[in-house]
Length: 207
Picture (spheres, rainbow, N blue to C red):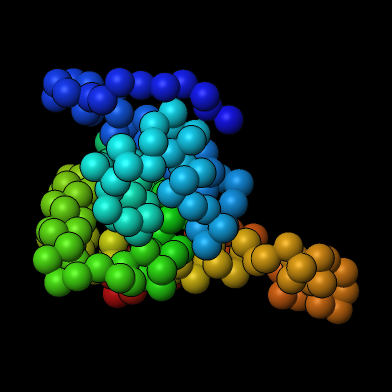
């Protein structure tokens, strides 16, 4: 547990650092706990701030984790994409290198976006669109896709990611239940499943 005690951040640099510390603490908790089991009090203690201080940056657990999602998406957008590989293989490798992004995506629509008011929802979608546009432009340049193809591919990639991650990362009780035959037929390998979906999407785009 982080027992550091900070004075109130006042300068823009201090505020940016404090925000980053809170996001880092949220990422650490989410790596080992279900979203439902995480409290803002836990994250505040881990970050070394009071819960009241945390609320100055994020007004709810959902808004905090949406900010974490966008931070992870920024890293995905900035990461190198190996254009020597096929589109499907390159993006599968990209996703495998960012498991926190994948896990957040898997609950984005079913959990994180719930509870937002109209203004918050609109702002998040505006932020999301800006990042998608950046990634779409990279796909156009590196893999010779049209603007329409790149947008369609990214939207369908998200849909596939939600399903593949959820099915390949079941709760502990389910994972144990399907560990042996004949129930092992329900085991899903994320990399294999994701690659198969992206291959099919790539073929559909070129058909």
